[in-house]
Image (cartoon, one colour):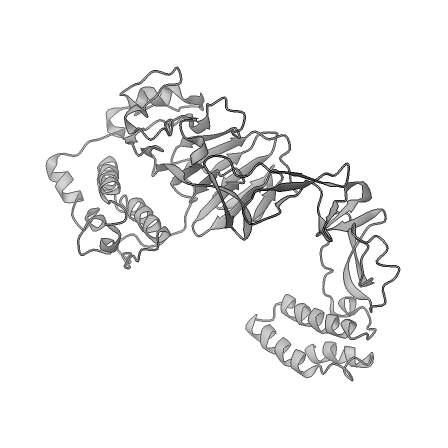
Length: 472
């Protein structure tokens, strides 16, 4: 079958110019390694067909003969087997008329649309020309490597509007993710881990067992220069991860299935408003261009990271982010409390059937006697975290293990020594150490925290207030 398809191109004189043997051999290898999967055959045929067309050789519609599906095309475009190699663009609408290149298999913009970057748009939505370079409508860029002048393509006037604001206080001009821009000088991070453990932006640790929906973090400042957002969480072993944006754009995380507006969607996803959702290692990450980063490990940990421009502007279970850990238990009415349960009740935003703002009874929040506690502090349980010769010893100087160690002992007590109840904390310490480039020795064994299929245990949602939040 493979030889037949490659020979098909010979009929149309391609083999006289492009030797099909190397493609034939690659195809055989790929199909064999792929256990006969059809896409390997189709991919090789497409490469050979493209090579023939670029050489100016006319070939037949091989996809029909080989039963290969048509490639999917972006919005406002369609597939053509022999399309114009010089598409009509916003920069040069007449390019197709003067093209002398051979046709190519491609996606072509529909009638009335022009190619703008990688999208087909109506002529009215075309961008601007700046010093011989095409700039898409609405796109901003800096004209020098010091970020002293920022220009934006005006869709209405088709001209580039430039200002010289420079980077505002708390930002610096540098390249991040291959893009030059004004980026925050520093970040602070808050986390909720393995259910009851909270660490505020300012580093205050506390435990809270509420199972309703709470505001983990949000912007309480009236500063108009700050982008408003809220992050809600609900912790319950029976629940799963969920992210919900405002303006009726909903992102849901459910047992490793990702949905947007109720439809299953693969990561990564890019939303208007420069918000992206993608997978980084074990974490699903929501990143916004104003510096917000929300991470969820699909299991038990939610992290919220904000830039220094939000210093003193935050509120919720994560505290006010003013670099003072002593005033983090701040109620919604502005008063301080010493009770985590009272704090949670103050920041409760929704109730679900059966939820509580603390332990339903004493059995849900058990405490260890000294004998049990000493047992759970050994290397058979949580002791590996702070062992001077253990798998994490190289990380101790970078991340103090005491907080995670105490959380680990707390959890094992909470679950009465249930097998594996210490694993989430060891996993969290591993991730934090590796994020900082520290080597962690192998600590999992078949009888000690074996890797198993993850399932969601934490509900969380994030609301970001924007004027337009939809797919690009």
